[in-house]
Image (cartoon, rainbow, N blue to C red; front, side):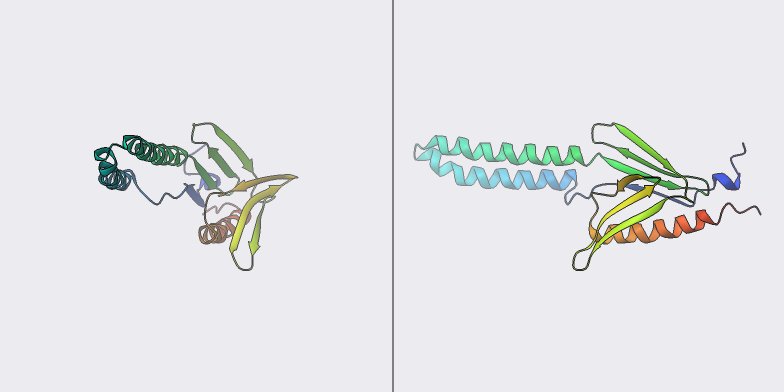
Length: 165
């Protein structure tokens, strides 16, 4: 099969990743500032002989560190969506690297959108032949609405079939 075949033409492709408000560098700056504040507020307790208070304050630093570490680890998860004239592929990769993949025919798949009047798009799912697979669960309502618009266009184009020019 030729790699330039119209049936292999990519109509839409996206890698969806969870949003994180801090990058690693910003996290280190935040943690350093937090440590400085904890040190400055804990030092008087140590001087007054109430050193266990400083230990508990250090525990706060450890908890913040491990919470952010878990957040960054979960950010390694992603979803790949790809639409060609003959196939829609959804691949979900967990933070641990476990991969699950679904394949649909663009002609028989429907993009189901749950939309709340006040809060926007709450859920997106591909539905085909009794199967329902949620997509972009970690995105916010605005990003889901943009994705739904782009996927709808791509599926409509795929349903027209490959272009043999």
